[in-house]
Image 1 (cartoon, rainbow, N blue to C red):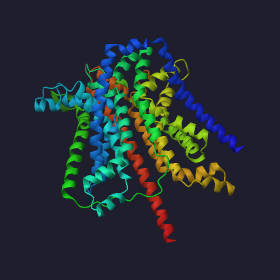
Image 2 (image 1 turned 30 degrees about the vertical axis):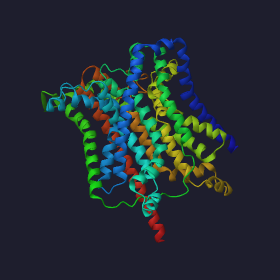
Image 3 (image 1 turned 60 degrees about the horizontal axis):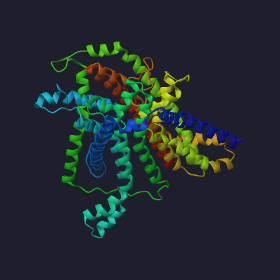
Length: 535
């Protein structure tokens, strides 16, 4: 009876992914029948947009990964103070939509930008370099998180042995460091490249006449309602994401380490730490200054001629429905977080704790969304659910965001559950303890910190996303982030800035509450172990 119960749950999860991932994407592919694929791909404008996307993405990826590696090295291989503050600032750009980074560049380097007027700059921010800079700001926190995770778990033992043997530092770098980071760094490169090439938030703000594939797809679907042409472009955008997915899937280290890596004993170095401070301070100023300008712009009477304080733009933005759309975003984010955590936990339990062929298939479906860019997923949902009860409702926005951001939280809990004792269920069943009680009383309490991290991941990303929901939202269901695009088209930069501040404020509150809750849980656990040791 128990076996059928859990098999039924697995079947439900498989059907869930079938309806929310596989069938929508297949529907998009079926829409290619009505499109002249050869004509679209050989079109001059398509070729230019594709070349632009490749050039921008390759350049921004190399800059982002290089800078992220330097930042991660400064944070993991030095004795500097204030690492918590620097880490928070580096991750701050993750809490606002990508389109806001483009708007920040306009405020600073536009025709009447602050730095343009201050230094008398003649060059335009619109075009190639504007997209590159905005994309670096948008992707840097993600690349930093991935690389710092790689460096944090590197074992120092080979370096100590090499030092004892008198191996020069340059040889250690070539013989130990590079082989260790080669495979995971390729995964970081693919992930960052995919993130940049499929984003349209930055190009829509600072692209100007420099067209890219995401912009072209957005204009085809929203501007011309040409779903067939949009599907062709979506198919092309799937290629780098699928390549990244396949490479990451076949190269992922599936076995647990049999040892605890020995941390690096960091020696005192004034030059190294001073260089690290310089890199971190310059980067922090570069990342935080555009965000600070949002506040200035939102509360200036008329930028740049009259910088006196006013609430006029705030009131004007709220009159245009920002309050309603903020409520929409919060409802969507909370619903996505709850639904996503529940489904991700259920999937991870079967794939990490039970195993078998069905678990492997479920694992594959759970990480499949990694290979589907937000724009492509949104278009797939438009085509598949257009005549369903979900169309033009908050429900479809909740489901699409859950799928769009599902893979990363799933992998968090999958790795967490895989580290627990593999014999828990067997011992429990021997003692007559039901599996559900083991999950409720043992596994969930052991995973609560990961569950909190999953919740915040779903929430923050649901608040800032514009790609997956841009094709699906209507006037009544529109999330707050889409107002940035709307106000930008109306040249209401002050209103766009205030919307960005609202989104940042909500995400900071959620991040702060999660940090407090995490601190309370850790303090209780430490108190428990201290008391137990005393007894």
